[in-house]
Length: 175
Image 1 (cartoon, rainbow, N blue to C red):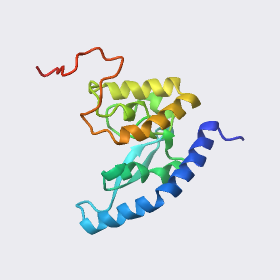
Image 2: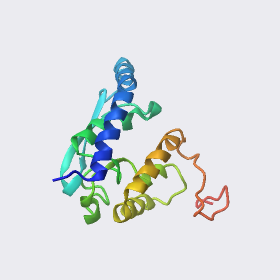
Image 3: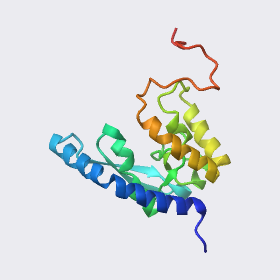
Image 4: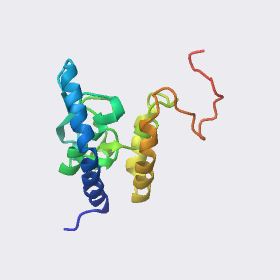
């Protein structure tokens, strides 16, 4: 059986990224260990994967330079996650048990992750994940992977409104 192009992309690009991220990950691990954070250096969380099967997601306990996302690369190489896909959710979380989520591995990045910090309503990330699962293709994966580095530098809450969002700048639903 021939591997799917998405899985080949995950294996090739995931391996390259893990090699490139190796030293920063080790540095982040040492720096985090020296700070002795509550909860330890590595955070374990059970999330729902392909076919609804749960797995333990190991995350470096830091947000500096988004090393926490890079620490998920071994999960991509193992086939538990993909580079691009819906956000990983713990079992029991609203949306985690939806049927469309079972057809795809959770991803390091995706439509919802790229829009993180924007002026989205609370339920829109779930809709973006569903849209991705229903309409994904390799071109979309490549486009999302190319946009991801810029979103890692974006401070949550400081994102610009999208072209599809017709609200005026400074608009707040709380007013």
